[in-house]
Image (cartoon, rainbow, N blue to C red; front, side, top):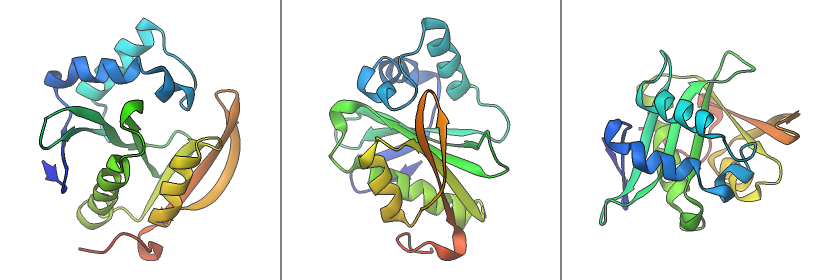
Length: 169
C-alpha cells in the first residue's frame, strides 16, 4: 500500500467491486472516457480490475480519514504503442480537490523509481482541461492528437530522464 498525506493507494481487490461499479456508473466520469458503458461492459471493466491481465496493475484510491472510495489508477500497456499508459478515474464529486494530483504523482514515481520504466504515456480527451493541466504539471508533453471514441484525444508522454515535477527517490 502507498500512503499520501490524505489517501491510501492499494491494489484493487474483490472488496472494491461495489466502489468500482459506482465509478463505472458516474455519468460525468464517462463523458471524458467514451460515454456510458453497458452493463456487460461494466462487468468486463470490473473483472479486468479485480483479475488483471499480465502487465496490468490497478489501484484503488481511498480517503485515509474516512476510507471513502475516491477513484482508480492503473498502469497498463497502451493500445497504440509499446509503452505503459497511466490512467486514472476519480468520482466526479471529488474533482477539484487535488486527490488525482496527489495520488497519480505517487504512481508516476513508483513507475520510474521502483518499476524502472523509462517512459509513460497518458491519453485524455482534449476537452478534459483539468486532466490536461495535471499532466502538464507532471512534465508530460503532448505527443500526438487522434480521434478515438468519436472525439479528439491527446496522447501525452513523459520520459524518466526529462520529468520536471516528480522528484527522484
